[in-house]
Length: 203
Length: 203
Image 1 (spheres, helix red, strand yellow):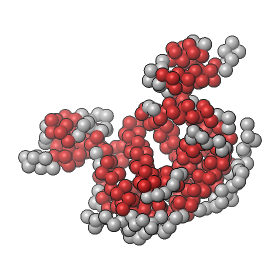
Image 2 (cartoon, rainbow over the protein chains, first blue to last red):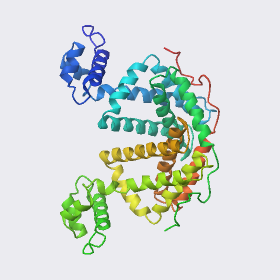
Image 3 (spheres, rainbow over the protein chains, first blue to last red):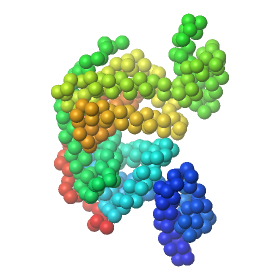
Image 4 (spheres, each protein chain N blue to C red):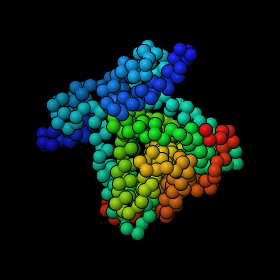
């Protein structure tokens, strides 16, 4: 970025989120975002491909950070603890960004296309974490299941962190959510062959 | 369905999947599906809203079956065992449908729009299961985490079941996947405050 546009990228992101919150995502144009940020449309397109990308530009960095922390955990560490290290690393990035995250989440929740994009983001993260665990020597299906569990903890922990009255740190909520998942998963033995009362015989 | 069109719905579904597999989903038209099934376009639209719906028409039934089994599990049963009952109930429906499921999965994997739709289906299932668990008295975040875990097991167990050389029953693979998830989740204690080597101090 040239010094004639100090933090253009950040100003555009802030302006975009303000407008999405005020008027709705669909109703906001790139021209309006640029104007609110005191910049030109041309500058907008130098930083973002389109108005959706403003909301998802950080996804790649987030995934890289998560993956790097999992990959970098000590070799002796179990998959679930490597994932916990990833959750910790990600939590640090969000310190001081709760209000932004709340607004972003509200915008995404209100729009079907954005909700889909968010689901894709999480599915992509899960695939990347599974690959990272396989490289750590974790076999399938354990690697994919652990990755899905890690993403579930991230998703639920994140939603708790942005809840209206929540003030605890993200890292704490992630750790609590992971412990909750352990507790609920251990809740009982898998029934064999089945315990459903309404089930019908095999066709 | 009138008797002059015996199993029109099933014939359309079979014809659609054949064509999607042969020519690709995008390249196939409703007219071609109807023709292959020996029916008219009008009949197609009496059964399906569009060509995508042919692939997802069963999603609602699947979710209802899963939810009903979870809701119907004995009150004393832990959330994870209620989910196991749901996985068992769902597995019964897929008996004798492995080849169809394999073809459907291949078609969906090859198309971004269909992959998104599949993600939405799973997210909707997760939300419905969480709601069902809350009605069983499970508190948050345990209900949402357990639901996400149940969907993860369903997803991974399903992928194992349709793998090329796999011959074991779906119910067995679901049970194994659930046990794998338990094992991998229990793999160690959650580190506190963090174990990542490359992590940087809180900003």
